[in-house]
Length: 217
Image 1 (cartoon, helix red, strand yellow):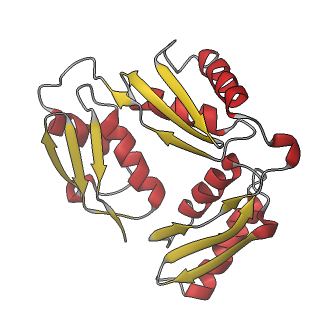
Image 2 (cartoon, helix red, strand yellow):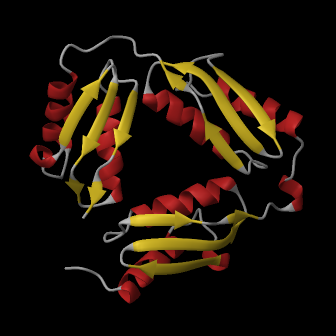
Image 3 (cartoon, helix red, strand yellow):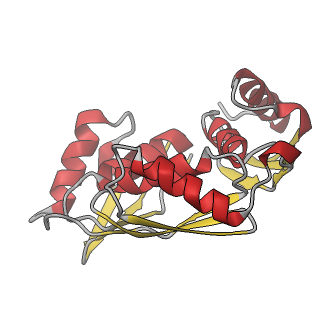
């Protein structure tokens, strides 16, 4: 059953209000044919990411236009040198991020991460760790992957992974591989399933990049 714009708008608002990490009072929601637009402001970059994740959890959302601005409280405003030092400190304390594998740059509160790690979960852990810092306005994650092993049959391993754990029909997903890059196409039921499929592909040794072209239907 396809949700009306009114019903989907209500579900998104309810999900934002349900998430305790989000102050939804200054967030406005507009819905058109399954595409959700978020406008307004939040107090941190972490809240901005949390709002986006909350919208993705709602069934019936086909796309997101995220136009939130960050209105940092005065106490959270920091100079870039202090932000870089704090980012390096939290990265070194995170066991999921290899020691001294990530370089940090900050400009006007915009943090850029570079470096090389072996797994996607390590790259994502670095991004989320820095995103939680007070004073961050945005994070550009330019960390690259250096796979440990090149898998002999990447497509077969990804399809086996889908069949073991995916809630969607793994046989409807098209998988293409080329020089460590995996391209996924096909329909899934939600944004969560779409992201789970990409993470499953990233978990295969030899995969350096995933182009996620799956559609939510």
